[in-house]
View 1 (cartoon, rainbow, N blue to C red):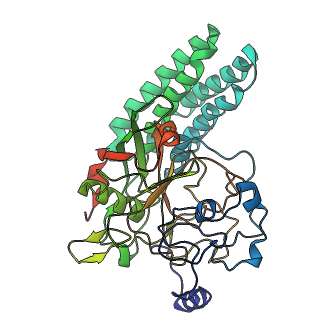
View 2: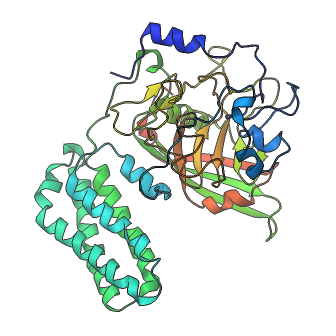
View 3: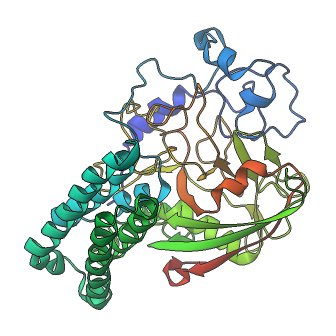
Length: 419
């Protein structure tokens, strides 16, 4: 069963939320952490309103005394840094987010992920730690082969065995390259080996890990993962007009409602031909349709379709719905899908209404004083449901008015239900 909150707790939480007519700091932006310079409601502010509407720098904004302002989402004073360096690679985040529990393959993954840190060592000295990581991975695969194969889902065993063979072959080639002291090829071979690790891990996923709440079970759901391609015509870059093509992975294992509703809009062609509506070097946002509506009007109902806030916390068996981690006093806990990676994809929403997302989405581009990885103001407040895993650098050159030629599904369409 999905995470539930008692009626009494819901009433208590909502009693502390601002009234619907309370002053807003932006009309549609997903985050409100400082008050607007103006109380005007007629502008369409972007996701991080305090970046666009308050005349202060990020450094100044970071030093603002938030308790002196009329706020809904003041940053918690107990916000913490996670132990160790946060994972910032989107594909690594997605691998760790898979709902599996197989120690041997996770140890192989950690060994191979550690190569990124080893490569920071200057010169050929880094090859020693790299070689040890590869040998350790080979040793685990040899000693724990049966335990790995036993963990495959019956209907995915053939794919898992093929991926395991490819991983062993890749590691053998990797070892030879290290002996040849070819450091330049190490990152390429590391990515290849980790891609096979990901395939092995995906073959271990058995069914769907939890039950979506009944009130959301009839909405479009992504019961697994899907890969999308996004093409954007960038009119003005340092190199002149360019066409950006990016690959996006949606994670329905951890955000089935969020990912499913986005993928449904993609299949409807909702974003095709739409312009980038905010691009300030911090986020890229789109999805606001023309006209007075702030989201997608479902032709079947004539109403704006809303997306509930959906956040799965590390260690929980299912996502939390309707409430932010701040609402529930869990701000020190880490979402399975954090705002750590360049190109993190999330729903934009009204700052006072957790379940007000509809069609507007934003891509997080970089860290700032207010959003360091592992201790930012977005985790637990906004629903992440995917990551750009290839071509994400193109986000940095996008400008307002650049046109999305298309977003299309490359694979995983069979995982979309109720669309």
